[in-house]
Length: 142
Image 1: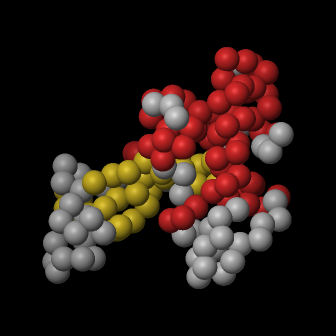
Image 2: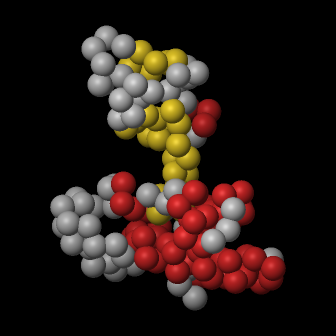
């Protein structure tokens, strides 16, 4: 029982119990990664990306999203939408809600350039909630 927040879902959805246990192990590995000079949990090494969860658990991405949504509803994870420049692939900014994605965004990689919502790339990423980060004692190399 790594994340007591998921125990209720294991009981409620017994057909997902083994997968939720596997997700817990995956999340624990991500959370305890040793990342030199990471500067805290805001580092990309601690992002939980649906396609990487799918590959790590040997499932398809849709099922990984179901599991990640359960973890989000349980308060383990929070979702973010990372916006990237369509030209340089550089990270521009994160938003906490799809509704907050701007129609245009100023690009820091190109002088006086704005990208419209149809141009920039958005990636769904999950991060550990402040509740999870606050209640566990982690040894992360800084």
